[in-house]
Image (tube, rainbow, N blue to C red; front, side, top):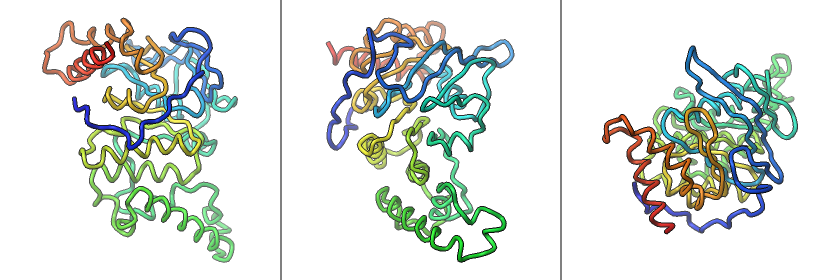
Length: 304
């Protein structure tokens, strides 16, 4: 596991995020998202069983755990891409239960995917413009009258151009999205998410499949989201990256939240160690989670 990835400037850690001792389900001072009793089963398998969790506002929260812990399924439930068996969850005080994904996005909760969802046969600029909300031209009748939407379309394109420049994709704006590298598609998806001016950005494994040349860029952009006043919740396996940029860490194992806390302290939590090591009691040491276990051990040694 590489430890060379570092932010361009080490972020100032948020303080006072929680009330009382850090533990699974601990109350936050100013939560932006709250989930209660969210459970999702597939046949006889319980993929998610979260009793209570709160995401702190204006902070970067990492959701970690071994493979199969239920992290992505939990993301899908919170953002309307899947439906739970039971439970309720709210964003900015408004319940999201039974609200479809497109309406969740309009409310200011935007997510990206582990496997990018760019439209390959559209240009990079066209992908960006799709991310803007409340477009007049989307109405079938108003779309027939160019004078009603041209001014807004120019404003949307200007905003997209500024974001592409910020993400160093402006030279690719006329290229098909399919021609981008895996890392560039991750950047495009993050940039497109910002077209809707979100309040909470949820990133599902933003570093997965990204070559080292673009990893630092993605890392810096995640830090910039917080600097611009957004809340970030992300799934990640790179424990060194988590320790560098996360203000708060939530650990899942077997669908449940088993630990929460400051990233420097949660890595030493016995529940976290058990969650990772437990996945290997009966598995081959060459399995994909082995690197995560070694990273946990290394981080514990670093802290000591």
